[in-house]
Image 1 (cartoon, rainbow, N blue to C red):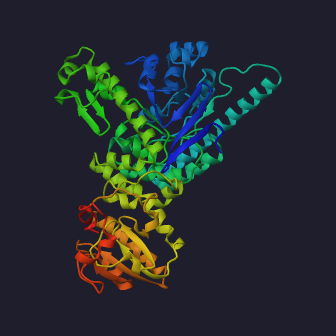
Image 2: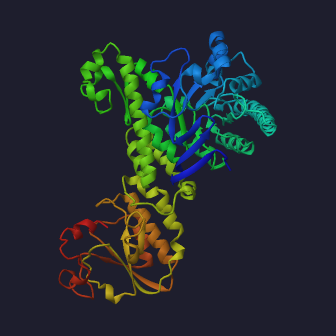
Image 3: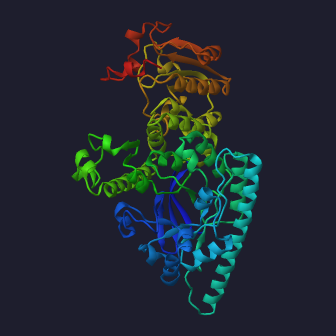
Length: 539
């Protein structure tokens, strides 16, 4: 169990947490803006204004530049950068992935990160990109694991020595309490990612970054990204904070958070600005093609698209806008977790790009695992798309059908009104039918998740999920006799044919032995709600 990470609230696998670092507590999920020690389009001292609580920079760049190295060793990393909050440092793995080699050893970069007072240090892991041969990925993972083991030993020795010094009445020195990140590698080979995650968990790292995923994001391979994250999370200590290396576009934050990622970092705010790109939570625009600014941040509220395009400091303004939008999305995600609405936000964001829709489908392939993370009680379930029927809440209900024991005559009908002519008083139990859940006791109608807000005309997938659950409930109660009232929608699916095999099915618009529905069903009508029969007629 993590000693430095406290989970406050949860939704799906996402969580709001408090990460304790040597320079303060950070609330997650959050983004760490990348600070280039050589080039600062926005001064680090201003980062708190945007919402940044923690930054990330590159210790290898500082180590490789004599002037920067001397200043950092003399005055510390925080004075060098100009930020008094927590700072994480990468070790040079990015340069290793770009140039194929770096002029530093693993133990040297760990010692340097400690010496300059890094809050969260990173060993010199091997960033194995997508699609490499399995043998290469396995060999590079072996090297990474050897370096992680060495780094863990070095940091633990330093901590033990510091504890002894404190016990002897001596003060701690800079770097004694540095946290250590354990990067998880394995390319796109999911079994290697799983093994890497289990290995890192066994070494008790403070933060667990998922590395070498930037190429997947750059090529919009979000479906594979989802599977990589899921493979890691399923094999990782659930109490440890997870960092998705290089993820910086707000369009995919909600998706990654729902999978259990807590920290993000990216230079996207600056790199996109340099390329004249304007970030939004739904995608990216070329600033020069904008006629209107679809944002009310401090930059956009005092500019027009034309004035932004002509501004002498256009790059800086774009970078500022990009940061404002980035942290706005983080706050929106936190509120969604607090409200129990994270999955609704995920579905909304995933509709912004076709490849994100593929990622949503991939996400729900892991609903069995997500259901184990998801709180049992939340606020109202909103059906946002045809994919909503695959969410953890629906799966949880299907797994709990065996808890419902029914006897005698049971009526399954639409929630508010039906025209079958059947009277509730003639049945021992009344179940309401609501996609995507199916049949549930009418007494639970105001309880989560059956107080769901759903589409008037549900998708075929949502209906089939509901019908499958209903069939299973009927089969689990062989001593009861069920009657199902359907609406005017034409049910021609195979699943509905299966329902007709296990219970009596009555049309909501036909006469029955109980008489004419139009005249004799007043008992079940909702007074003053003339629209009710339209609302449920499709079921």
